[in-house]
Length: 113
Length: 113
Image 1 (cartoon, each protein chain N blue to C red):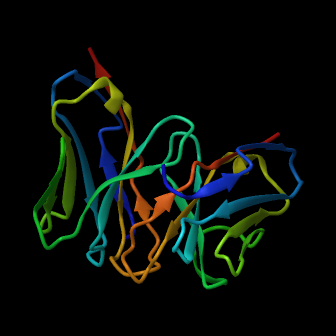
Image 2: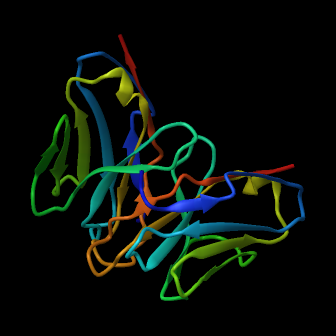
């Protein structure tokens, strides 16, 4: 088990709603990356936060946004939910000064109805 | 140029046999190649990683073979056990802090008695 925690574990929303997912990074890690994993697919990079600033973004629309707090925990916000947003959302923490080794949390399973 | 191609999609191996999963990448800037193991309902767990300064890395029953000229790398699981049944993902990135991971599509491995 990594020291990365995520909440909630599962979430059911309806189309058009907004959702906030939370992640606490492993102790000593100051970088959090968010990934979306659709069923049967590999994780896709959404964005990364480093020292409370967005530091790189994948091919996701602006309705996907995030925050990082001074304690390095992070939030992923998704507005105007669509059916295709149903996926496992993973956060990974890392300490870039050491390496690019990223340690994943258990994920939040989001279902959009 | 950011793709990582993984094969096979699924693999069935008898207990005690060798499981082999292959990946190929296109971006020659990649220089960090981790493998992740994922059980149903869990986040990916870092299994083993290699950097291109070596052609092989072994940790217990798990070995990565790396061919820089062919831009290919593979995971070998020796003496495969039923507990190894999981989905395996290869990934690649630059070995530089704050780099996103580009994942393969995954291989579902089943070890049969």
